[in-house]
Length: 487
Image (tube, rainbow, N blue to C red; front, side, top):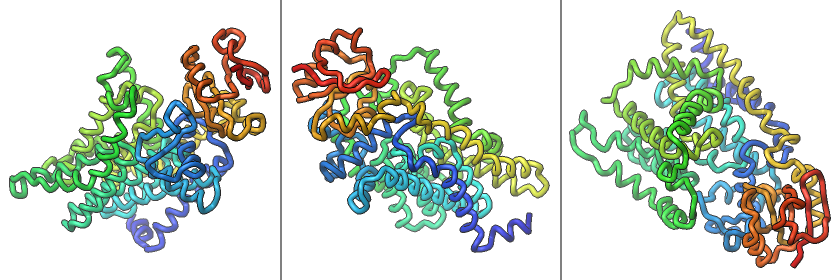
């Protein structure tokens, strides 16, 4: 181990290590850069990409994120602060509109997050090997493996969140005020990009009342983060009232599931989502070992330990509050858990390395070698053009459909529950109805907004509401049909 430690401590070793990790990841993702937006949660991906496209084509004002669905006035729909989308659109202004630029932006963001985990772990352990291994396992988290190259603002929020924790730990060790301010700035950026990352703000409470120091309440650790976060809070105070029936805000208060269903969701996320997607099956043994050592050596008197305990408590509260929405499908809602889970993995690595004759080192080596493979096997099938996550004819015949619909024509879309996927692939604006919302008044509203084409994958022959409004059939492939509309 001394010889290995000597190699690791060489200046060139971290650079070679990261080049190796990035090269493996690039090799695994190479084919994805040539693919259109497909796969798991295509609705969220197309929604993000649509905002990017509209910043580039329609309005570059960062305060006016637009969708193609005309349900919203001028298509403007404000949710998270669209910093990531706006930055990608800025790159479009420089290099042209190309989806691979979007993928590359979020991919590079992921690598910055990985480097942040390396820096954070090193700040905690002062052990380069532990830090490099933690960064490796973090990079090959299956959920990060999948979303790293997909249009998703959560990726940028995670990056800012990791660095906010890093600067806070540096502040606790060095007591330099600029590090505290940097932590607050990165946290407010993280929260602006995705609200759930506000849970990381709990770390500042570890210094709010320090019994070991002066036994007084120190308001600066609440007031300074609050004042730095005012721009993000103002944004959400402005936009949340416009969200209408969005269940994210009401959380469990708006729950429509039974206790048994909620317990099922809880056990599924604990025993399936966490080991399979968040951590990686190959890395789970290290997580379990990390929990074991953590409970043995956790010291609440330690301000760093206390910081992570407070974050952990708020993460659990967040999960319980949004559990009915997270359900068994919204894995990216759990991004805020990633830094904490992999710091527990880091603790396991540090504990194993500190034992000179531990056989667990062989298990750790096996996890290291296998984790890229298991991440690939778990998530690579999500990019499947034969099963893209929606009716595949919208993907395979998108060019033909775009040629049939004039550029500025408005389209009535029936049967797209996402309200974003079909309009994105058509590259047209229109009025999108969900699967169960094809009522006469909804279609009439679409007609009143100037739609001239109707596209659907529903059976028009058995749907009298649709049948009453269609005119000429312009296109049909399997279930997908494009019509002109009767006025």
